[in-house]
Length: 289
Image (cartoon, rainbow, N blue to C red; front, top):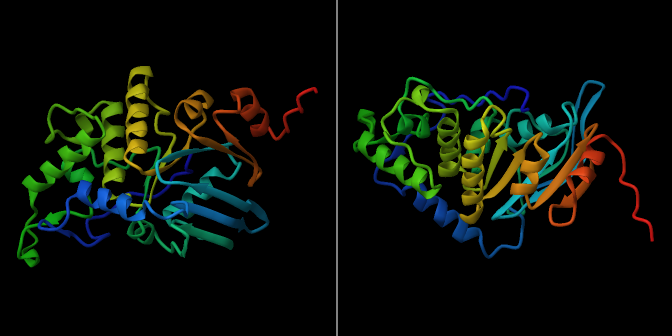
């Protein structure tokens, strides 16, 4: 869980966009292309620590996620996952260590700053406005405006087109693009929240328990969406309590225990049993020679 990230954007939280500017998909493709030659990970946490009084929430955490890679963060409640997510979302700041994007140290002093750096978080509670349409939710706080922009007239048709393109790029089919978010199924609502993150997340998309409240069919749909994001070249960090899901989606799994990384395992080599052992704070027994 994210511990209740306050990720609800307000209409004035970020400057509105110009309807004549780059499209969401065009912006994303440009960002991925521009960053492709770099060998630096999309996201790095280097020696990151965070305390709350006498409580050590995270200690010397090192983590990295590359472009086109899905990395999972595992651990019991209280292991430090929520603290990592909140630091990436700009809700709290580390006491020590660095957060790096494409090899450059960044200081995420607010949610707005994290978004400005292309980090988008999909919290477990989704943060959709149920009475607003799908496009209105995808552009919430970042609405496209018709020229002259000072008239504050929203480019509703263009936002509908852009929202449709983002959803289609993820393989998501929603019969009515103008439907209110509150009328969607759980899987559809999650897809809209992910689409918003994909549309704006130039650097990293963070997913907090993306299928926790979904059934089997809807879970499979969301997992396909995550794999499509990977194909698009996005860097994805996912927090989940579902070990099987981690092995279906992730390339690597970082295990946190009492705020420290106690294991980093490739899903090609590890087993759910090994990850479960690390989650409980035990080191797996060495194989007999």
